[in-house]
Image 1: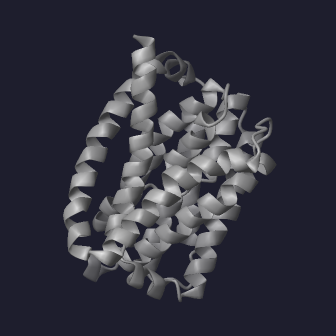
Image 2 (image 1 turned 90 degrees about the vertical axis):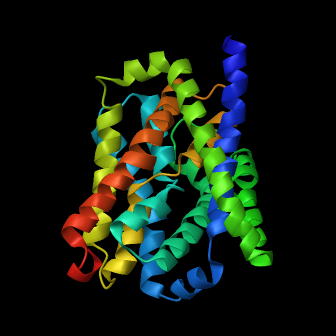
Length: 287
């Protein structure tokens, strides 16, 4: 039974990563994203929050909060993987700009693939994987599906529009199966995390990211700020999981943090932020 579940887990994790990024690529409007990337302030703030302030905040929290070392490693890895692939759904609730959302996703995912292999050995204490070991699953499961999806859209937009909902449904069903398997396989570790600082530290991390990026988003309109905030306060769990799964003997606590982040950092934080943005920050003509 355990071997069967382990096999299902491996397959569904791959589909989870590939499917999410393939759908993003199929829906990605590259010309609109490139136009938004001409906004230097938006680009600088996005990169600063995604790959400087976000990771630094994660490391800082591990120094302040008495987290067990595996949980701390998981939080640091999540700190380097911004932007849930689910933010298009959240964006429709917040009323932000879809063009700037596309621009943010391009920056976040390209930055994750390029920078994470070098940042992990530097920031994640006790994690000794070399940059190439980290880069391989990111290139295969993150970059390649995104590029393939974007290429299909560029070559045949109608085909991409028809394929995207199918990929979404398949990935959604797979995600449900994956979550069920992970919850069962790691049920002991998840129950063990209750009563520790693992869950609270994640919630605090996402709340600080969302609040900080909104308050310090100087010079950006609401349309531009909303996608940045949603992308920054959510996590793309795939790269963090891929990094751990690519290394033999990865700490169970770190994997548990990533499993928790599927619910806390990829879904809950984004929808909570979208609701708060819409309720308290959106201009009157956007409500």
